Length: 203
Image (cartoon, rainbow, N blue to C red; front, side, top):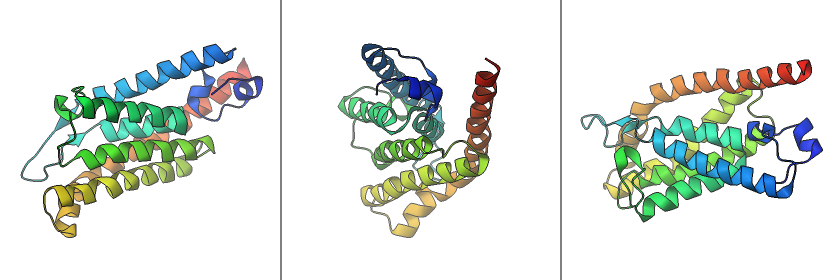
């Protein structure tokens, strides 16, 4: 993505606020963002705990980080960041949940869902989906639904569960936490845009 005067004047996502006056600078900026995004997701995956009596799926901070990366970076940079996270982790980098790696795990479907969700959320954010509280709520709901759409069926197949069992183990226990993350994001993202708008006007 190449920066231009128009991009600087009207950023589509928060990452566009980072200046890049030449094509080379824009490429370098975006490469750093991709690496940073993948690293942030990997770091957040270590904030996790599992309650086996409730679900084989760990409670993680990763889902929130993925959605923020998607909204802040836009679809291309977020997609590349999550593709790097997925590919490197599958190849052996121990930055999946609790320092794991590889793809022979029942929760790998959620990681695939992270990539799809980040791209979708980034696409919506580019079109103003993170500028108001109501729109951000919708954006976060879409992202979460996509993650579950990949993660729950994969879990069912991997652990030979019925559809209802997979939903009870792979989605229901996490809805309360998703709601808290959604509320926080609905305040954080529009609030950041409000602060940016005010600063740019004052500048």
